[in-house]
Length: 446
Image 1 (cartoon, one colour):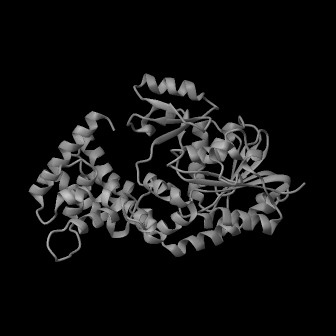
Image 2 (cartoon, rainbow, N blue to C red; image 1 turned 180 degrees about the vertical axis):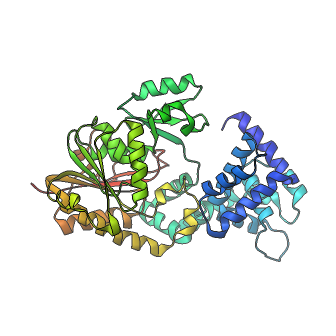
Image 3 (cartoon, rainbow, N blue to C red; image 1 turned 90 degrees about the vertical axis):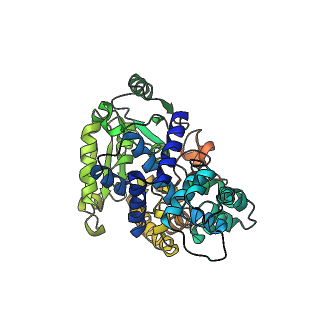
């Protein structure tokens, strides 16, 4: 955030405490979001279409405040409880939550907050993060300090040990705007120059070959370069999955393609040679993929709708013939909590086992497509071992596949993203600045 933006946020925060339309809008947005923990992006777009008085600075402030309150809901309530004056405990009011968030994030001074709400020791509340940092129980420290359900905090501590807290904190931050230069039309360097000519600052991604982080705030989808198909919005971790899948003139099946972010990356990497068969149970997403492919100049993608999960003949005929299969399996999405923070309050512990069963079924069936020597890339956007390593290992045993060490499956970049045992790819927002992604490469014997 620039110094000017920070000063503007402090001004708006002080105005919110005093009342007015912006305060009312924020409280309404917060209350509507908490009803069902629906998508924050949907709530914001609906409100901004209706409330035409909201200017650019107010939109940015309202968006970041609402996202922040959702990300830090548990931390906010715990901080209020710790600083409540008097013996009577009661649930926080939404006005208190709003002010507490602004104080915790440094957008509002303790003195300004005290003039509005006197039932809370705001100086003590401002020290809450220091207090929770001294908590000796790592699960409680992660759950409260990083605002996660107890079960999810426990899973992160179990799977990531001493790194769990840093990962959880990173999952609570704002995600960067990351794009992939479409090499069918432009190089990353040329795209960066074109965006710079529009006053937009970019930084090359550290690992992904075609990735750029857009530092300037802008509506990416209104840019002429987007309309021309020069780039797609895609997290760097997602780009890495497509690069890991690889291929030159091969037949690749993207079995859970969705709207096709990785499908388009695969086709572009192969220079519109070979064939990418994009499959999904959602025909609407496949329709969106076709539109995106036309804009990107991609001509080698074939779409197949998996009605009721059944495989069409066009896929059945390819059994034992496919050199690469990408299964970006439906998952809990824990690795993408930066972008969908409300998901942490919707998901339940039992969901993880349900996802794992579904992931195993999809990946195991996908393995039957492989030609001798063919490779299955099993991937998720979660960082929980039950959905990742456990599923990959089970499928490998069941189908007689070899887990290919990452250094063998990929290039020198494997050293930057490999798990400690060297077998899998795993990236996260703390170490790599990406969303949390996992991938395993499973090979059918020749």
